[in-house]
Amino acid sequence: MTPDATAGPATTDISDAHPEAQVCDPVFQVFGGRVSFSGPIATLKVFEDNTLVKQAVETPGEGRVLVVDGGGSTRCGLVGGNLAVSAATNGWAGLVVHGCIRDADELGRQPLGVRALAAMPRKSQRGLHSGQAGIPVVFAGVVFREGAWLCADRDGIVVLPEAPSDV
Image (cartoon, rainbow, N blue to C red; front, side):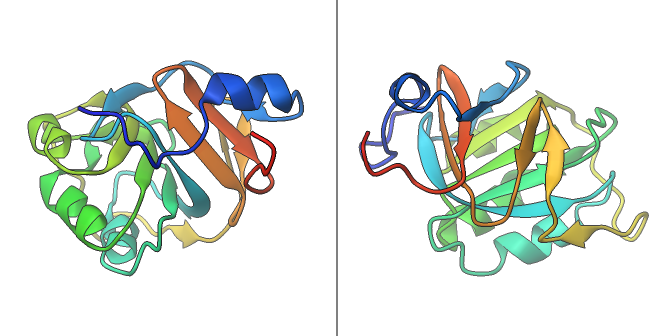
């Protein structure tokens, strides 16, 4: 894993300059080939079914961060190596998954930031549950909204209504 020089300001600097910034509870592990990443948020709410995740990462990411509320389930991985390749290829800056990933070594080889609760080898079951895209999702003490700005690095994850211009 390597830092990304274009990832944006450090989360510590953002937190210092913007006391109103939302800061995620420290529950996420670092996966993916980029330690630091930032961008506008796109949201999904799913449960043990990664159909919508697959559909999202197959579209142009345009530097966005896909925030996936997987309900905190640790029973299956919602993002694996194939989806990480799609996300990186299609220009997603990163993924934040309130759930698990799989294929951790493959994720580590992609130029993509990934945060998740844990790794789990079991795959999700497509078609098991429905999901929603574009709605506010809440986990780790933060409300994630479409279009808000997220920045992640080794110190954590911060969210602001828009990208800061002063940091």
